[in-house]
Amino acid sequence: MMVFSTPDDMRHASAEWRAAGEQLCLVPTMGAIHDGHLALVTAAKKAAKRVVVSIYVNPTQFAAGEDFDSYPRNFRADQQKIEAAGGVDAIYAPQAMYRDQHATHIVPSGVALPMEGESRPHFFTGVATIVFKLFQHVPADYAVFGEKDFQQLAVLRQMVGDLNLPISLIGHPTVRETDGLALSSRNHYLSAEQRAIAPLLYQTLGKSAAEILAGGDIQQSLDEAKSHLLAGGFTKIDYLDLRDATNLAPSLTAKADDRLFVAAWLGETRLIDNCAIGSHPARSR
Ligand code: PAF
Image 1 (tube, rainbow, N blue to C red):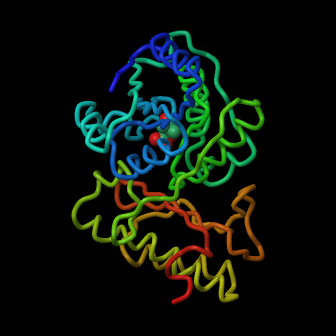
Image 2 (tube, rainbow, N blue to C red; image 1 turned 135 degrees about the horizontal axis):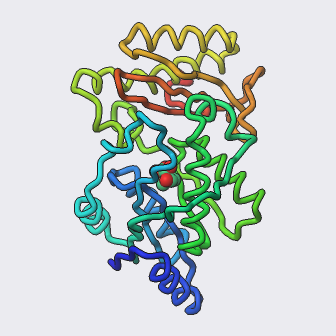
Image 3 (tube, rainbow, N blue to C red; image 1 turned 30 degrees about the vertical axis):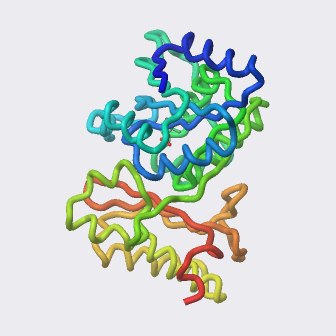
């Protein structure tokens, strides 16, 4: 696998592939590669002949006091995991993505405003800006993003549409542990005790999905789900909402593809998850 660390080298390789008529798919990551990322790589290989994984812990999507400094960084281990899964054409691991005088940001509105937009107001500006820059460095035909960050994917689809970016985004279903916990680099932060509580997040989404699909009162179900999480050991809930899958507006009458979205804390660790109410395995129990 080639490793590129500068925009010029990355663009040069991409241009050669494109000149040979080969399509290119980008898998943007912040490293700490796990099986969820490897599933994105597999999807990328189906989409295009050439695959690039980018690894960059983007400072602008972390607010002061968040986990930028402690975010797991181990390039060798990441490289080995990608290699062991069959490798990709290149890893793009830029050293720095912002020059000292950087002063231009993409500030998404619309689907970026609720949920993560309220809890972490800096977040989507950081994500949109870095992903836009990555798309300039890796001029790909496709990029794959996990649906664990469903709102992020919606924000990026909105950006691609609004700014006419010549790239197609592919969403990949969330990869889960056998107990239902969505794979996330942040799961490493959990103590053994917190890890045992964490699957309650997806279980609770399932309980709510089943109630809502059965015609139960949406607000009552969401309120009960929050109480259930707090009683089960979660320490704080940022949001637990039922929303339309396309415009992320609150759903007042449930449809099967509406999604439940949750962000909740276990001590110092913030976990997010989401699912379509019609697709949770608990919906028909
Ligand atoms: O989902 C992530 O890991 C990040 O938000 C992304 C898309 C790589 C941008 O830094």
